[in-house]
Image (cartoon, rainbow, N blue to C red; front, side):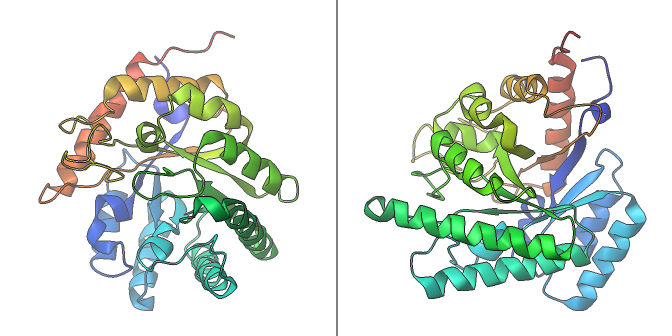
Length: 308
């Protein structure tokens, strides 16, 4: 593609994955957010909860100054606490909804444009009950967000039987779910992630085309899925080109090509598309980020423009 990548997307990065020591809402959040904000390759950043109010104010000042688009990833509020948004136990479901509502409040405080979360574990014999719990919770979150402003709510599609074992899940169920929510709420959509495609055993076209009308956000990353004995197996988001992994330049080219063909990547309203990469063991986070930038540059150069 000869045209600038920034015509078609806001290039973002998920802060709490690049610097995983901050995932529980603690640690050197301000320092590492500042490091990303100083890098003009990125015009978007995804942050998560920041438990300390003084640190939150520090980060907000950095982001206000930086001219970056901000999104809020609420996944750590569920993944680090064991809460399940589709819990068929009402008390458990309510606790999950409450923490995500707190996330919505924080997202507004930080000037975020959208908030993303994920569905939880389920049992096959009570799958439909879990699905109905998820629909109920999502509608409550969309209503709550709408009352406060224009924050969009997105569910990230995860694996359903390997690592996170989330209800959503396979593309057919993702489609049913998106249709059910969007029929009542116009501030909702789906988030797709290149990292999760190998874990879902779906190609980019298989995973994206059926839900193309509902995608509002996207992630770029990698996964190891061939054998449980391999390093970084599962939903570990290793750097591109990690040993025995599934995604590198070729796979990112295909992913971006499909997103361009469906109109998700576009010049009128460029969406956020963020790296979700995580250092493996003692890897240097800044080198992992540099890796991702190089891979995207190579991939974008090979994406074919859509003929008018």
